[in-house]
Length: 349
Image 1 (cartoon, rainbow, N blue to C red):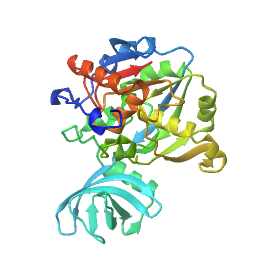
Image 2 (spheres, rainbow, N blue to C red):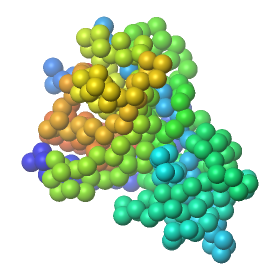
Image 3 (cartoon, helix red, strand yellow):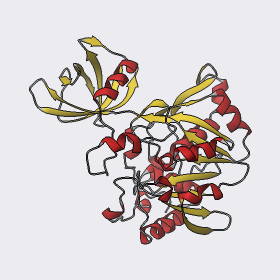
């Protein structure tokens, strides 16, 4: 049963999909599930710090969301929409709304141009970017995107981004630019919360979230699912804390995936699978956590409520099993918890 994709499906009334966050942040609901007691407590994020297990390391993802969505036109004048995904050795990976062919030129504000190099089978495109007819690199592109781009709200938020999203769809500790989706569990924390976290044992990792986080699992047997790759970075200080931690609480699924990928790859690091710069480990994370591939380093998890048939709900099931996950989701629906990126949260302890 746990290997069947259909087992991870559920029906969610559309009014439970959160389209904007609650203010103040600590007013969001928090469902606390205690694994050892098999008990559920319903509270709010105002009480979050009262439930953190003692002597655990709190790990957070400090990635920063790019203004990755830009609007432009073909040379014919037809409108086009482009979503930046990531930098490649031979160009940039993007998603384009509108039909394009190889060698097409797309035109955007600030004299930014894009040339189509390749059309991939999965619908993504490999492109080059130019400004003032000069080929540009990732750092230069990021500066332009921050000037002309839009916050890439998830596809299930059926509205255009606005000025509030510039702050709301970004964690208060976001630092390293490169994601096209927010680590949503982190959105619940305010500046005051961060002062509390800084007084506790904590560290940061960076995992740049790609659009693959929203792609559904298509294999009818989830064991056959091929996970997308995302770039990660772990500083020497964070590595030491993670290595020496007895218990770990990850804030979000992306911090969890980063930790679990690293935990399985220590030996590979010694054989130079990872690149190391100034003591910082970096690599590509493609781990798929599910009931058949459970966490080996992460003990506790703070997360939001996720899409049906998604790799993220399977990650939750890797902690507490499929049946308990479905039971909790039905309870959350009945009590009208708000789902997805701007929604309420669940703490698994």
